[in-house]
Length: 458
Image (cartoon, rainbow, N blue to C red):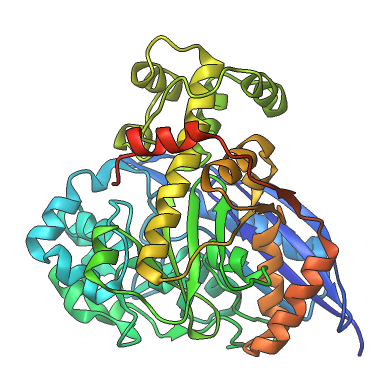
């Protein structure tokens, strides 16, 4: 067959990139064509994304790539844009770390009992969720909601800017806590409860669909695209490791049991109608913020951390105090008094591995799927020390890579469309072109002791 060219634009919380993929029917070759920063700043009293900057950078991605057969964009989830009756943007999109949602989870539960909310959406309780953001907006800026005529998640907005197509892609729609995965539609009851007109939500489109020539919807949620890069085997769990660590396992249908709710697990859409049962962990955000305040090459820091005595302390990595602190090192020093910087960061990484173990155990309990291996993907898979800690703590092999799983999964869906066999064919090509690193577990009773003594389920 003749070669086809496909452009994947992958935007995370701190940066974005574009990969140009060339497919010959058997092998995939990729070339990074552009890389750019993603920034936020305080505007009109809220932390907001610079969406115009992203728009311009995507234009640069497309210009540098040249002619392509298809393109698609993936980003982080939960945040959104609102358009008025003239399709004007009603303010720059607000960042999920903005404090407008502080205290809103409790108010949401006064309107909708937690049990009912989980049964209707299957989404974990987090104050960053879209539904919580919409409740905050209805309380704090009702005039903005009154003027809204279209709701679009961030990748849907960026796609609309290029195609004129207003649609919410399935994997991202399911992250909003506004979508009913059993009914397969938006929940007008939930939206009404928080003061939102359900008519502003457009139709939901499946990943791999092509609403316009030259445009194929990837799995627009970045974790959905990352997992789409993997040719998974039975018993494979995965960790999409970046600013957040999302720990999960693929399941054929959403798991909405009371046990899953009490474990605060989330059901997010995957390819071909499947779901990703998972849970967010604070992830490498903690390390990123440490380095922002105390800049140095990450490799130098990790080399010193690796030489530091293990198991000196433990921290709840999902503590609200770590979500958006002004000074991460100061917060960690208060949480781990008496430890120097290297010991603090080693304790944080050990605590991450222990939290991964707890989440995997929770997922196995809810799904009935035993964990035989963990695939770590995304930028965080380059942290060899954390990979080894994860293997040691969980007692199973860890396979790290690919680093660019999100953009590669984006390409896999563009190429394979809605054909599961075709997508798997591309996934196997991705496996051939990358060289994952395997970390075998080294038994150490101290992991068990740390897990049993210190980890508190949250």
